[in-house]
Image 1 (cartoon, rainbow, N blue to C red):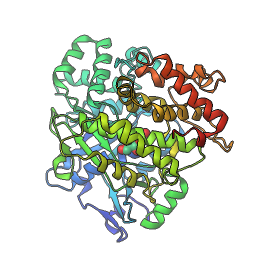
Image 2: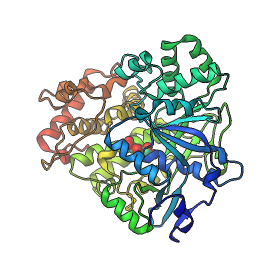
Image 3: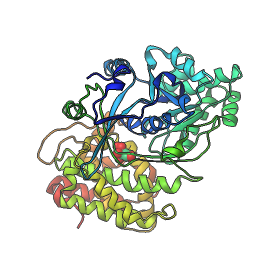
Length: 487
Ligand code: CS2
């Protein structure tokens, strides 16, 4: 059965829909970056809100920023299905729940129609602009400054009415709202960034200042940028997985989605023009998200990276498979126990060892089979965000760098795109230059130290510590991955 508004009322019994009237929905949120994570996380929460009374105004218009065949196909698929898709939530114990998500009321491909995107952003009914742009998508350097000197940003400054970036769109739409006397909207970042709202604010205000300081002042005064911590493991979907999901649901979904049953969203309650009833659907509010971010990024995302870099080199494909390897399971455990947990203060009442055990359960969830290459993608940007504080703490406290060096050495070796069995794979590293790849692959191991992933602690990084990393790499290259694991 095809999935669309008409078939919503005759879904197979194993497929659930919250049962609200989609005809009554209005767009109140515009979202940049409609990837799997957004569809399994924000859209999942909004879907639940929409079934509550008085929430019809919070439908989401998705915006795709990049063009090309892949994006056009995605837009066509969403259109065919009236924005609907199935989300299979899979628990580690094998239980599954299949839910139709109806939060996406429209999807716009920005390069094809920038005016339509600006129109919806400038519409008074739009009260939240959210985004998942990825860790590297904010043009922020390691000192926390926005980089104006990149082609897309320069293009957006030169041609404000045909932007290419989320920041170009936000600032131009704020200019239009201000001119028309329409109030602001809230900018809600949903990326894995430390203080993602502050990062988004820096990006938007820096861009706005370069364009028009008065407009920047208006944005600073009126627009709010709540920080939030987001969490839900959402793997990529291969053709085979899609077919299996559709077989189980009995629906011919063109974009079926799979996620773990665990989900978390913690945010600051700073919405300048109202918000959905998030508190009724499991979102936690707090005055300070930092302890939640620290725990999530330094424990989950960093250990995810560690397992992924080592696992890819050892020839594993998925994280549940890698976690079966005793060396990997042990280093993940030791890394969290010894290199992370002692240096972080958890939110009140949170037990970090219990959190670690939940991570192990989540990684080994056999239904998810999260791809190591997905986790390892854009590792350069992720290391900057997820590892810098851990490395700095260890350097400061003269801690044991063995496990961190092992992870970083694996990252550098991974850029050689060959596993220990000689099998090739492809990394996705949007921010690395050819020169960077050359340095990572160089037989002079010192060249690898220049990679931007390490910029966050370069100042504190003394020669003996650099040499330690080089030694691990030597072992990796001469004796293989297994021999390079710290004892
Ligand atoms: C992963 C995340 O890609 C990565 O680096 O660690 O996508 C992770 O799955 C999510 O942050 C979980 O919330």
